[in-house]
Image 1 (tube, rainbow, N blue to C red):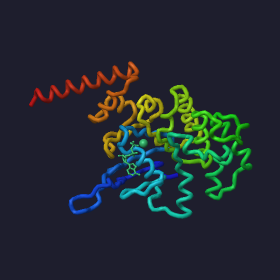
Image 2: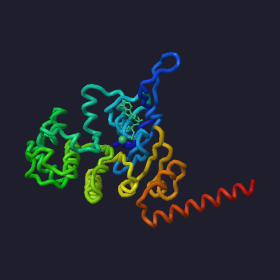
Image 3: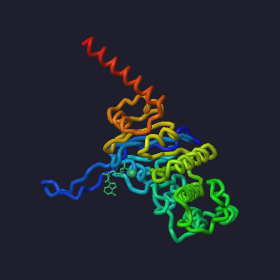
Image 4: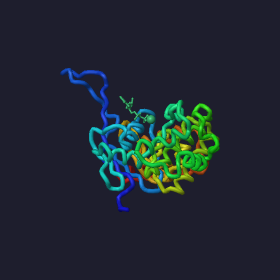
Length: 289
Ligand SMILES: Nc1ncnc2c1ncn2[C@@H]1O[C@H](COP(=O)(O)OP(=O)(O)O)[C@@H](O)[C@H]1O
Ligand SMILES: [Mg+2]
């Protein structure tokens, strides 16, 4: 154990070609991720929010090393993983797992649940403790799936159940950091709540950190410990969940919150009170000028 945070990303930059050329014929690029720094601590959930296209998924891919950054570094428990390759990169793949939005497109449709959840271990060349069948049954129970269905294919499950298979697969390698990229966004509200509860229970048991990406602020409010707000490739605000929701500091965060349709009354009241205080403070500052 070290004092270093579970995950620390510093100054991440990722540019993509725009497909256009500048005056001198040079290919133009734009920065999808522009100097992003963030930390995720053990046992906490850092929610990354922001409108579509703000760079959340690209940030997730950089942190998980599914994509190489143009600049910046990622450290896991103080170890720089930015330049890992070969065996060391394989080892790292176990410590950071990603759960994506669409369970069906991230699960091989021709593989059974057993093959899917044991694949990461097989890929890492690890022995499966207790054998594949018992290991799979145990994981399925932990994520609330009937263990008798370990030989079924993804298409034989509902969306919520399929997402649980994705969660089981992530759990199989005992990750330290789990990145959920819109992992519950495609699910019905009631199923969403169940999967969020499962994610929280597993976190309490395992102590891993979540980097939880979601555009739905009602969901974020349920699960986040802290919130980082992204806009146009930059993190514009980071703070404790209640602070960000009730007293947002950045203009963009306020606009984002104002656009939420389902707002809880007490949260709304606190936010209005904070806004009122800010207005009064501004008015006072201006009056004394
Ligand atoms: N592989 C890619 N090639 C080119 N542009 C990309 C690629 N991935 C993402 N982008 C662009 O980068 C920006 C940020 O995308 P993304 O990280 O997916 O945002 P978010 O997850 O917040 O919606 C968008 O403008 C998107 O079109
Ligand atoms: Mg995205």
